[in-house]
Length: 488
Image (cartoon, rainbow, N blue to C red; front, side, top):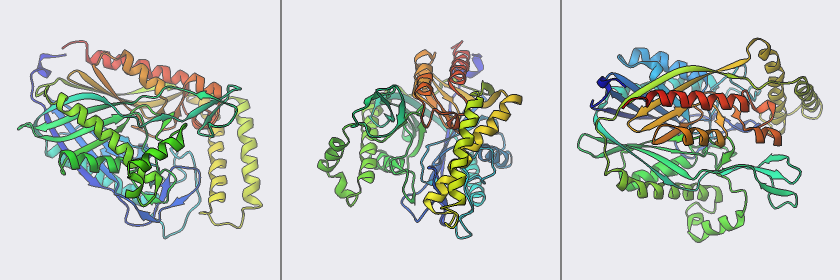
């Protein structure tokens, strides 16, 4: 590390924008079309800018399912006009993976894995919402960049049980996402769970807390199938953080490697619900158990923050080394076999028959019709990938690795299974490594044991990249981290 990057003051900037739609929208997530009926809580985009000795890093968190290429490129294009001096390529955006945020891509986009039929003119179109989101996100980043001032940072790690491995293994060795674990053929939960929570705190030059990054291994999808617009448990978490630490604090949620994780309890569900009732959380939500679960998760995260914050604040850093590598790496695609294609064609025929016969008179928003339409398109993508792999055997992924003092941030574009994130953290040269998934278009990236178990999340239709690509991703990430920690 050059001497120019050492002993240089860090400049910190924050901004946030409300990106809640003002009309009904098609909610992304699930196979069936869902049209929002209300707004439960606001969707937000929040940006943190860091600059030191000419190096830059901008982290952006978005209450959305994924970060499509059209979204990130649209934001960067606007930033070239709105934020002079900022390098757009040093901006990375990541999604919280709420399933109650709007669709922003047309059904013919290459990033769409589950297509749909036009729900009608009364629903805000995906492109209309995309324009709103791109514009406000770019404005948010530009404001954070313009408002950067000398400040301090501190970091720490705590623990909160939020994410649970959502894949069970049957006695015959097959796997299943979710399902009844009380069944006689249940064997065990497939993989690891990570209760750690990584925090980055920022302060102004008077050492007053201004904001924080909260990174944990769980997508925000407690109320994932509901018909309202919502940021899910991050809404309650942000509210509780501000209640305890200051109403004007900025909060960036980041989802660590969590492709096989969710906030849903897989075992002892009744015992969990009983405790929520005894704590009085159910009464506060009018008897809505899922909303009470969101409050419980927020309480756990903020309890971890309260444990970490006083200790971390004893070690404020004014001149941490800032270094940022942004590059595209090529990952081997998961190979689709002829057997996979045959299976996909068979599934497509089943759904086509239902669509043309028993479901032909139903509207595009009918749950069963849209489910069949989406599943048929989902399997059609398998055939497309079979042809694509002949000419494009690798999948390009944008990778960002950032060093900030003793810690590192490392992004990936996938719903990355936890094992890969653990490998990165365990072997990283950094004191703490914040793995940030869904900094791109998504798709599951499973482990070999999950592929062997099969089912949703690890079958060919779910994956652009498989376990071999995951291994390359780990090694490329670790190499970039090591490069940034060679000196200093």
